[in-house]
Each structure stands twice: as C-alpha cells, then as structure tokens.
Figure 1 (cartoon, helix red, strand yellow):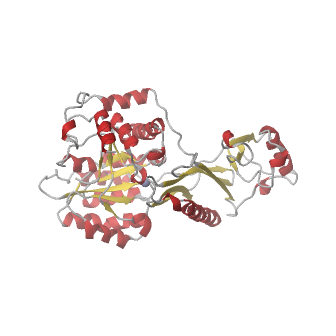
Figure 2 (figure 1 turned 135 degrees about the horizontal axis):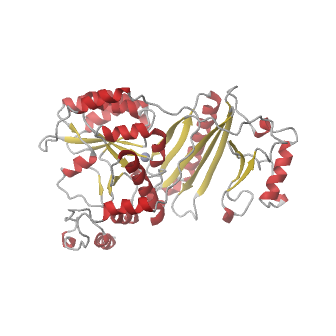
Length: 474
Ligand code: ZN
C-alpha cells in the first residue's frame, strides 16, 4: 500500500511552488514547471466543455436531506413547496428510501468504501400541475452496477391535492396510453402489469412515461423514458394544458443590502500569522439560508468558505456571486454531489471541472480547491486531482449540524472544540446552522480568532500545499 502511494506521488503534478512532499526521498521527482497546469486546464476545459446537466427547477425551493454516515453517505435533493400533501408524500418517500438503503448497507461495514445514496430532482409546473421527478442511484462496494432510483410525485396547485395519472386521463385513456407504451418500448405483453404507467411526469413538452431499469425491459436497456407530446395525447388527456410552463418566481435576495455589506467588508483587517485562525466551511449550498449567512458575516466580519454543489449555482447566481464579491471563498463540492470514489477518472474530471467552470463563469475566480462529497477519497481520486491541479480540503471539527439540526448544539460543538488551525464543517442548508452562526461568528472573533478562508488558512500552514493531497487543518 505504501509503495502504491509512493508511486502515486511520483505521478503527481504539483501546484506551483509545491516542492515538499510527505516523503522526503521523493522531493526531487517533480517534473512540471511552476505555474503550468492549472490555468491552462480550465481554459482547455472551457474551450471544449463536457458540461453536465443542471436540474430543471420550475417549482419549489430546493433543499436536501443529507447524512454523513460512515457506512452510508446520503444526499437527496428535494423541493420544499407550499403544498402540504406533496411535502408530506415526499418526506415519507425520503424516510422510507433512506431506511431501506440503510438496511441494504449494513454489510458495507468493514469494507474499504462506504455505500452511496445520491438523488437529485427536477420539478415542473405545467398549468396547475406540479410534477416532481427524483432520479439518482444507490451504490455500494461489490455491487455489479449502481441501482437506479426513480420516483415521481404530482399535485394540483389549485386544490393542493396529490394527483394520479388517472386524474388527468379520460376514462379509457389509461388503456390507450398503455398500448402506446407497449408498442413504443416493444414490451412483451406478459411482462406488463398494473404498475406500468406509475412513473410519469408532465412537462411543457408533454407527458413522459419512465420504465425503470430492469422492470419491463432487460437490465442492459437501462432506464427508458418515453415522451408523448400534447398533440399525440389530445384525445385522452383531460387537461387544457397550455404549452408554456410558468416558471415560478425563483429568486431570492434583493440587492439592497449589498452596498451596506460591501462597506462593512472594508473594515476587515489583514491576517496576522501570529494570531489564531480558523476556517468556517459550509457544504451543500447555496440554499435559501445562505444569503442570511452572508449578512451575518457582513455584520460581524470574518470570511467563510462555501463548498457549493455545482448544479445548484444557476438557481442562485446572485448568492454565489455575492460570496465572492464579499471576500469569501467559493470552492467546489462536485457537480451533483457524487461520491468521487465511485466514479471513473473521466466522470470524476467532469464532476470537478464542470463545477470549476461554473464557479469561474459566475465569480470570475478559478477555484482549485474542492471538498469531496462525504469527505470520501482514495488514491484514484487523488491522482485525478493531482493531474487537475486540485487540492482537497476536509475538516478537523465536525459540527454534526446535519444530524442535530439544533443551533445550540452546533454552537457548543464549535465553541467546545475550536482551536487554532481548525477547519470546521457546517452546512448552509439548515436554518439551525445559520442561526448558530449569529453567535458563533461574533464569539469566535471576541475570543481572538481570525475567521479566514481555507486557502488563506492553508497558506499559513507549515506543510506545503500540493495538488492531489487532502488537508483537514492548518
Ligand atoms: Zn456534501
């Protein structure tokens, strides 16, 4: 194992100025010139991008259920909506899904890698009909391939009630649609059952029927989506659906506080290397609570680091831009919160580089720091990061804010264990975490801590910072 690691270090491409390695005998092995790789890599990528998809979010406020468990890392993005019945149905589904896969993951214990449950969603508002489509995967060591996860939920915005497919079809409509699906997917009649049309979404383009991998077609066919236009369905669809979806009012954040905040910003002094410093870090945002967190920093001073999920940036461009404008560090947390240890080198590169390109597009800053989702990495991840000029940063102090969702507990976790050089893990997904910061930030400053970004913190580290390495404190 050690030998493998040494071999990997030889292969490393180091960040500019990175001369020390953890193994002294290797200190002369670097071949790359200073300042080469990283900038050019972003340019190359921007010239020929393999941009990953941004989810469609026409309705609801995006948030996520997360769990950083040793055996099972979970991130299920979901919408918070104004419809209680829909929220309830989604909540129940998430709870059931997580407990089922917790059970499935029991044997992941003692394996070298944990299981992953990662689910994202699209939401559509078509006329009065809300459709939410979850899609994601479950993966664990030694599984032949990940298990697809698909679920759909529907509600009527005007009544607040959940909808089934039959609610939008004429009385004979189901049978007609079923025959269309059998014909188009070339299904054997004997595999067809009453659940055939269970997974559906209504979008501005029409109706989609989803056949989950292995349910009606061979596993090798994957998950199959059949799309039908409103025109094709005009005889069986009950709705007078207009072909334009009304995109819901998404944003967020008035720019009015910005001037105020920038003024406050100017009061921040430079870093004194002889005084204690720590990095507060926030994963999995931006969320609807992030702007409030930025307000708190603006009021009391100090900087934070935001490890953002790439595919959330487009929804909250103003917030992300504001982070950078106000001196915080914006860094990547992968595009769709995938556990990097489960990806091929090219998937891994896309997860990292698409996020890096999006951060650059919005903030003008090329961020070469990431936090791997679930903190998970292995030698393959390190090697890809080394080649991309990327430094990984984990944490030394875990607030467990995703678990306790309690402002006092977050506050105590930090104040009891904080020390010079700490990197503190929080999530700006939760209002409780942001509430805790109302006290944490001024109290830490009061105790003499300088609240710096992770890059600032590491620049005052005794250890040299090298691409491909993982750091969790100064
Ligand atoms: Zn995360």
